Image (spheres, rainbow, N blue to C red):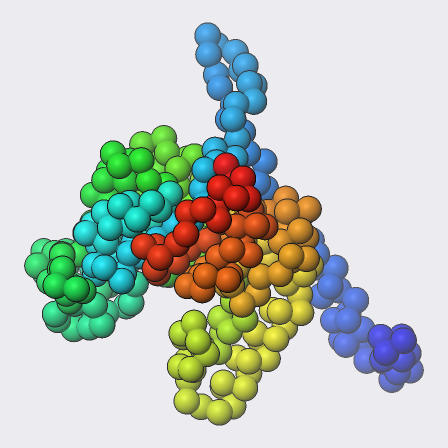
Length: 338
């Protein structure tokens, strides 16, 4: 009704430009949506060529194999026992029974992919350096701050991948920015090892999974969702991105719009992702059912509460946790998650 009234007033007022905008912008947006939209079909199966002809054999789906026996994973390893995003932390996660380790990826100034959550080394290291402005030769010498008297060094991405493959752990790459060079390097690391069924790459930044699917559609990708992506920099909604009240208000509006359109799955469908990574604050039985009905697998983060763990296990939703040593493995046996 509102659109009809606005259109009538524009026609009466002969607002030709506005008429074009009202009718053409939605049409143009829809056309562009389908032109640039990714498809998930290529990551669901593998097509083999042999003896000069295409066998088109449907093998075990990469995504199904990735989720097989995946009950819970270590968020940055086991940060309660060792420095986050370190090999020492991943070893502790393995000892705790994790099926997967999640870690964050950045790149040094000279193009070396490495593990670090923040833009700088201040919080986790013994120096304060901006990662993307520092060479690897300098970063590799930084000592990570000890956790329970255990310390380690910043690892390179290829070292971590090799370690996880050798130790039978699946991996979840959390990419923090849309650096095209880094995205291409990550795609190459997965391709050359042929570990499409052992790695999921996810990000808050939608450009990352969109670009990865363009480079190699076989890579399993995800979009990470939270209620406060645009307005707060922390999981507990205590640290706003900006102190400007008007900018913060606008960011909160963006978050609300994101929450309103989320049930339509417009963004995940456009990106062609396989997985929606949902904050535990967003998880509900209806949301999980809707996601799966629309063809998306679900992983929840970061779950450090026993009750939430039991609920997710019952719903057959794998999760990430900071306290892998405190996860009761019996909850998975009782609910027959395999």
